[in-house]
Length: 314
Ligand code: HEC
Image (cartoon, rainbow, N blue to C red; front, top):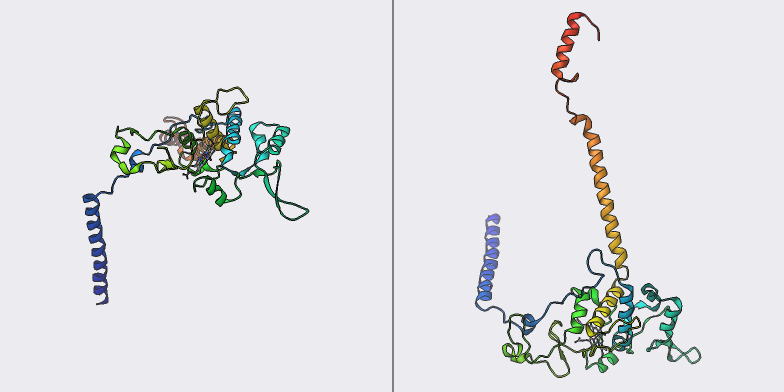
């Protein structure tokens, strides 16, 4: 009896689930979700063609230095790099003296305590410090940026999908919203008249919701004068900063790539050895007896018979 009741209770549950699935499924197809401006006009990042991309990717040290220069002269006014220390700049090819000078001359000082009075103070950055935040805290950062918070950039290329290309595309992707069309030729403000960029934000189709609080940081060619003489177009600067932020997020990228190749080589050799030992182990069982040779069973039987007949031993 209990079994039968249990069966019907279970049937009831399954029935209710099926009913709600069918009802909601029909509703989804009858009233499909409203298309949104962000969904239809958002763009996927363009390829920055960075040398670090791909399985064999390596950093271009000169490019990393240029990217660092862009960070230092432009982005560091608003963005911190709190997981990167000055001493790591050695990796980019700067000498010890150069790294010391960079830390010593860094525009933002590091929070500290006055040893005589115990009061809060600031001091010049040391090689062992992390890159300091330009703002005292989040409140100050928001106050200076129209209530938006400039995120720490140390890991941004890992935190966003297709990070290096995203940073490059975002920085170069600001556009005029009036008359802006997507790839299908639809005009944003005609299709979504309510999607006009609010006061204080900037239209950028690479940003998830199309309107970003960051003013275009690279406004003109030549904003930075590169020490190595490379022409600083906006595109070049954006590529360089994307390369630099790829390095800050994964300074050991090159080691990972070469370790990958070493592992593949090892696996290839190990596979070869495994195959040879397989052949060795099965050699006896799989040996083919040459037909008509001395080991051929028929030949052997005939030879044995002949030996027995003529009385030869062995
Ligand atoms: C004037 C201040 C300012 C400067 C200079 C600046 N940014 Fe920003 N940045 C912001 C603010 C504010 C945000 C937050 C935007 C938002 O949430 O809408 C932001 C956000 C970002 C984001 C994150 C976007 C996302 O997907 O969340 C990246 C990446 C970025 N900035 C890169 C840079 C780079 C690279 C530079 C230098 C070339 C730079 N920024 C210079 C203020 C600045």
